[in-house]
Length: 65
Image (cartoon, rainbow, N blue to C red; front, side, top):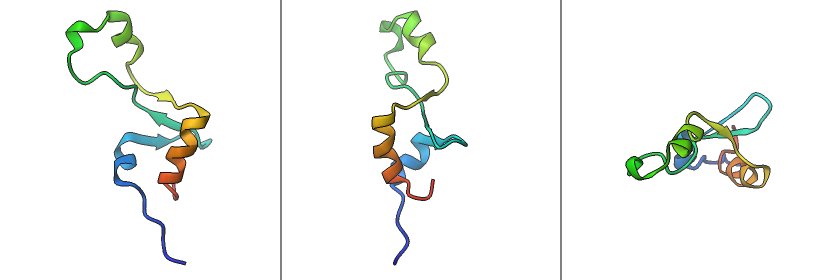
């Protein structure tokens, strides 16, 4: 059986934790920041763990983790 390919976009956008959960950067933090609230900008700092349902989709795109 041939090797499975990883989706190129998932390489840079997601990382796996040691326990297999998917870490992601929250959305809406790249531009037009002056119209977004301080609270939103503060809460979207750093990375967060993706929900179980969404992480199933991402895990399918990166077969070798």
